[in-house]
Image (cartoon, rainbow, N blue to C red):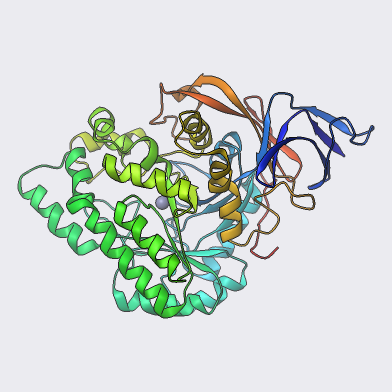
Length: 454
Ligand SMILES: [Zn+2]
């Protein structure tokens, strides 16, 4: 037995001074201070806040295939440092995860290497594979409606789906499985038209790339989102929209939910903390992901507070400096995506201090909601009987994010030099310390597959 003593514990929508009694991998009880078993190992958490370990359903682990960027050990070390106790990986790997065989191979890699608990979202590209993938215990499928032009990664054509008939068939098949479909909404043909206009002018700058994807107040995102919601209504396929970043996406999510359509949405760290044009001017492709104009960012923050957006996922997307540096000459050749899993929770605590989000919404967005939406019954809350997945936070510690602190293989962060108030002091996965006071203590292979409904 272990007892975490002295923390304020987030339970039933409130912070309470309780001790957390852990029996093996499970939360045994929450007890009055000092009343835990006398012979238990004591963990002093005085002055800290305990929240359920964060759950990130959108992580680009890069293994297999792109391990020069990241691998499952480095990725899950960063996750542990960031307070994340469960991750779902993404299928844009080599080979891309499309078949049951691909999935089995990837899950075996996690089994050997992951420090935190995991699942994996295969691509819903081959309709015939969809039932078999569900039988393996996945929680979700992924579809990219985007196919890269001018580069071969991170959205290789092998797994892109934008034909409406193909989407419709996939969603009908997924509806039979009970799993949720995560989609990167995108209108490839509008993108083609707009980017060719920039290219004709000889403008391949990071600013042009950002403006292309944000053209017409977000039409590339909005048309795809409208289509997906209509298809979810028609097919009964539970839908999860990733990269929510426009006012109209927020309106569509609220409207769909009011009409009883099963659609959820996520925001990613870059939309909140990196997406300004001034960020692009300063850091170019290093902060792209996407350009998010201010009025959209404000709408997204409000939607997170109101619960219209369900969760915050990192969309952790590490690329090397070389793969980003080329963006100064040709942003279409730079690999899109930004790393973020290590710093997202501290950035959110900092935003809470600034009044951008309430604490109960913060915990819901990073832990409780993703666990609930994807059916992880033993995650997302510190209720006795659940897995002892815990993040211990120092809400008041001020520190500066630096490239030196990066645990991801790439060794850089777009947040280098940013001072935040809020730190992850200790992370436990099923009762075992994986991050303690600045050191990763979790061992590769500690992580286990977590299936929905278990
Ligand atoms: Zn992504």
